[in-house]
Figure 1 (tube, helix red, strand yellow):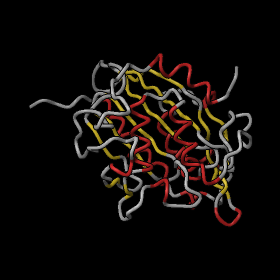
Figure 2: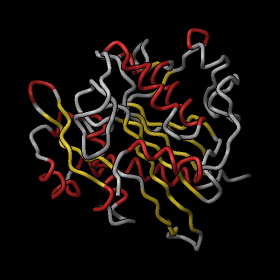
Figure 3: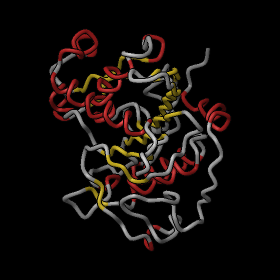
Figure 4: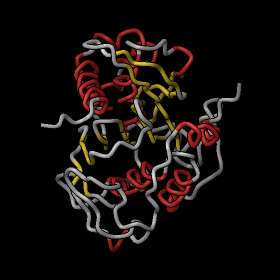
Length: 285
C-alpha cells in the first residue's frame, strides 16, 4: 500500500461535506465568527487586517462546523522535519491511543533542532474511528487528516513517509509560496486551507507584530492544527509541548514513556478538552 502523503488528495474531497466558502469571498473563516473576522480578500493579504492568535493554545476562531454531520475533523498541517510537529505528536498519540490502535498509523521520526540536537517525534497517516460518548448513547466519527508540506530538511517538498529526506527541491526564498501551493492542491477543504493560510501568513502571534510563517528564518508555513465539529472550529498555532525539552530522548524512549510524562499529559488534557468542545453543539438557552 503506497504511503505517499500526497495521495491524501484523493480521499479528502469524498469524505468532507461541501462548504461554500470561495477564496474570493470577504469572510475567509466562514459565517458566524465568534471572536474575529477578516474583512478583506485573502488573495491580497496586504489588504487583510491581521488579528492576534495566542501562542501555543487551542483557540476557538469560529462557531461554524466545517465537518459533515456527526463528525469531528482534525487537520494537521506540518512537515517532516518540524520540531514543533515532532514534540506535539506525543500529545496526539496520548489522546488517540485511548480510542484506536495507532500502530498502523504512525512512524518514528527525528526532527533536526538547535546545536546538532534532534526532537523525537512521530509522523502520522490518516485514520478514522467512531467515538462513543461516555455520558450518553450518542456517537460521532473522528477523522484525523495529517498533511506534510516539506521534507525533513526543509529544502524540498514532502515525498511520502518512505522518503522523508527527498522531494522536489525548493529555494529557501520560496518556502512560503510553495507551502501555500501544496496546501491548495492537497485536497484539504478550501475553508480549512484559508484558515491555515491566514493564521500563518496574515495573523499575528500574540506578543509580536508578525505572523508565524515569518517569525523565524527561513520563512515557511509552520505546523498548525485545525479542529472542527458541531461545537465550532479551533486552531493551534505553535507548540504545546516545548521541543527543546525532548531533545535528550530518543524516539523509542518517548514511545515507551510518553504516557508518564507530565508535559505530554498536560498537553493531552488540553487537546481532549478541545475535542469535547468541538464535538458538542452549543447549548441554546
